[in-house]
Image (tube, rainbow, N blue to C red; front, side):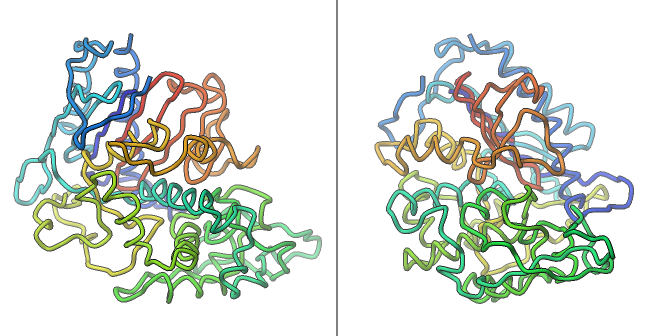
Length: 429
């Protein structure tokens, strides 16, 4: 098993005026970071000539050759990351590589704060953005294992407000229920509302096939106001029931960047009788030793947070305090912490003698659950979608260096993660 963590504070890049909310500065930064990641992927895959359970609370180290890797090829990571830093495409990064449960590379590059010229440190804390979603996937699988809910359960079973959803469609004489894939918030074309053909399920939310908040016509009609600093899942999630859906549930794949997974997190709160942030801390972070992963960063750790900057070198103010535990994108973490999370998945749900999930649940979460619906922005042929992660179904069709069955996801501030069971590789950027 190889794990790469290239956690980068990103500079925004200038592009054409955006037409989609996901094409924001954060998304463009993610694309630049992903380019860095893909180059690293080739270098690491080429360096490799069974996962093992770990018995200590620190992941051990080893020389690359001791675990069947090439030191020369691993050094290409330094070259690639430094090139992107020098080009101003990323302000800095932290990279780590492990194989067979042993760390063989761990380095920091660039700056964590451009304005103050503070160098990146190995324990710098990064905004995970949508890299928070796989953690939600694990939490949901824990509830499924324990019989507290089932993916087929209707959301309205736990949140009655979601019982009678409507779908926004174009208002045309010959309309047969057409709903465009995207409509800009506040710029919705003429439309009408039709009843949803069925209620949305937990499965729909986990696979982004619910139509809720996927920036289609329904999202444009309802708008998407920012979360307030005092909002909680209990106060915020019921409001989403008033949004028209972007398409009929289960009829297409449409990424819900900010809403769908938060609804699942609220259901987890209800069935576990535990606030979501507390649930993650007690059930996932503490057992894995993820001491620097938080929704709400303690004041004493603020100096370690990577400051997000623009091309002008000035802070973009993305670090305003909030009490909202967004499962969709609210976590902050370090390379070391997320290495632990990824190694747990690589080990089939266990790390340091602490079992988080059964191997069967990990396999279920990371297999294609969306049939042939997976699509939308950035889709590659040969891909599918599991519970909170994308899945490589055909490496040739996907033009992927990763093997069949690889899974992962990424975040708008530059984090990308994946695990390749067939080739014993896991990576995070």
